[in-house]
Structures are given as structure tokens and as C-alpha cells.
Length: 131
Image 1 (cartoon, rainbow, N blue to C red):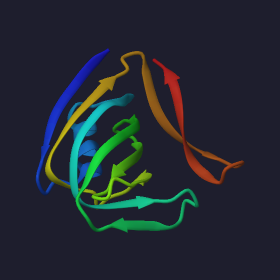
Image 2 (cartoon, rainbow, N blue to C red):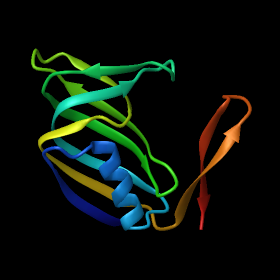
Image 3 (tube, rainbow, N blue to C red):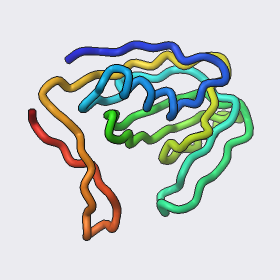
């Protein structure tokens, strides 16, 4: 497994930066191994798949996990707020890095991730293929 390490800087959008890395490195299938840093503002989609919530305070990134590819990224983010309560959900555009985010992505050499509509869920879902 190859790894990609990148420090994101103040003002960068977390999701857009990960998508750009996936395209730059032509990642067919990858996973977030680690992400440590903080954001100045955040946006997360809740479990309904519809509602997007804003977080308007500085937060620590306590967990970021999911899949990464140049086709699509599916990522969940947990944040620790200033009062140390935690909020989390599906990462969407608008999570802006405050001081830094140290990001490590593992590239899965023998796999690729595609997207296919699933009639049961009603969503375009990720599909994994060995290459």
C-alpha cells in the first residue's frame, strides 16, 4: 500500500482538498488513515441524507474516515467543539481548515472504486472491484 501525506493549510476546504489529491495522484481506491487538525467552520450532512448542518465555531478534527477515489469520496467527520462535545456526520463542502490538517491517505493498489445506482437504497453507491 502506497501512502500520500499532505498538510492542508488555513482557508482550504477539507473535502475539496481531498478530491483534488485524489485527482492529482489518480487514486483508484484509497482510505483515510489519519487526519489531525482543526477547522474554523464546518458543514455536515446528517443521517437523513438531506439536511446539512453548519458548525460555526472552531473545532478539533477527532476522526475522519472513509473512502477516497478520483471517481468519488465518501467521508464521515467527527468534530470536538469548544465545550468538548462532539458532532459528526457526512463531510460536505464547507469544512474550512483553521490552522492545519495533517492528512494521510492509504492507496489500495489492487482495487478500484466505482459508482453504481442501487435500486434498493435509491442512491448511487460505491462498488469495489479488484484490478
